[in-house]
Image (cartoon, rainbow, N blue to C red; front, side):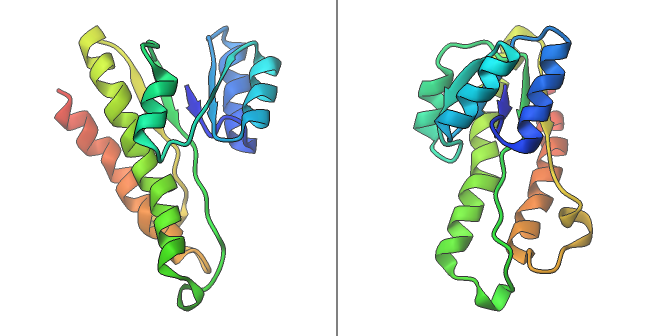
Amino acid sequence: MVTGGGGAIGSAICRRFAEEKAKVLVADRNADSAASVAREVGGEALVFDIADYNAAKAAIGATAIDVLVNNAGWDRFQNFVDTKPGEWETLIDINLRGPLNMHHLVLPRMLARGTGRIVNISSEAARVGSSGESIYAAWLFPRRSRARWRAAASR
């Protein structure tokens, strides 16, 4: 499963998995993009917003997921002083809460099966910062470190 699979990076990841003959779940909140990529790679489109736990749970259902690629993300480029708290919420929902939702829904099944992998896509903005992306960069650090604590906690 590739979240944000309908976007540029996500669709490239989906294509690469398809080259390896993997069954690809293209997860995206944009139905047209998800369907288009799913057709291209011979996969299945799952349309939901990763920030909505119940929608994600319903979309995944009982599907066994061997690999989760947390790729979905969103940013709005602007100076911090020009941002509004509502915009922060959107960034936090998509970029932090969304991957947490996906971990929570997928990891227990992986542990029960004794196999599975989670890949978190991040950005250099988490390490070095980026002009006009202060809120975006702020959520990236937890996303990068979450992979470390998740691995330790699942042992």
